[in-house]
Amino acid sequence: MANVVTTATHLDDALITLLDKAFIVAGQDNIIADQFVTKKMSMNAKSIEIIKYAKMAKATSTLIEGEDVDSIAVTDSKVTFTPAEYGNVVTKTSLRSLQSGGQIDLGIAQVVGYNMAESFNALAILAGEGSANEITVHATNEAATIAGNILTPDHLAQAYTDLSANNAMKYAGDAYVAVCHPHVVHDLADSTGWKDYQKYADAVPIMKNEVGMIKGFRIIQSTGVSINANAGASNVDTYHTLCVGNNALGYAEAQAPTLKLTGPFDRLGRMVHVGWYGVFQFGIVDQDALTMVTSSSSQGANS
Image (cartoon, rainbow, N blue to C red; front, side):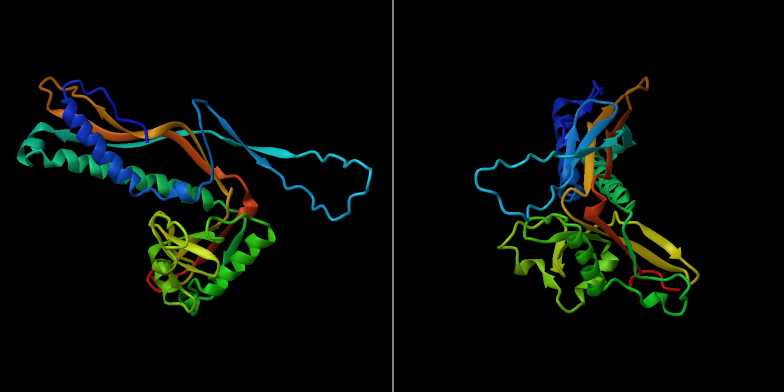
């Protein structure tokens, strides 16, 4: 996370430091996307290319004594990312600051930091939801039974098989990652075979928002997952669960998201604008390392 950028020349340096600290803490503590986005590039460029290398063919023939081995060309392809501008802003007034005893200053920085983190996570997940590989648990033409089509360990086992068959690489702990909405996690946590993260926390570093493991997936909980409200003929909410292997998703950054303090521009210096701004893009690098499961949940709308 880069340092604060400010043009608010009338703000005290100590206040700027406090605002920046509150923003960074609120933002970094809530970012989960950087844990499952494994291809990252940062440079000041209009477009950024991330290279994807194809796997070599398996060597199944014995070597012949005295003969050299033929070299095999490594093939690669490029995935082009075009970073775009993202940001949000609120305006703080002198009167509100005085009335709150200055507490609103840090509160606004924290709110802006939370918004940056939540937006960052949502953009990463939205990119993954463009997966060409989908397992659909629900069926929109089954109005009488769709509410019961929740995500189960069997569906995750199917996704695990798909990723394994594509030789998708795993994360630390020899597992893939599944990014789930809290409503979906609620259903999985009641399933046979669920292992709470405390039971293996000593063996592997725990990811942020990791809540458990099941069927070869480390489960990360996020509200950034899209809810397709009232999908299908029976008006049931559906959810996308991202089943991710290494190198599935990429992140290209022209400018890291940072705190922005601008103003005051009014004649009495009463208003300061507090926001965040960044230029970046998430995208799919390797389709074979990503499978999306679409399901309902017992906690969502089911009528």
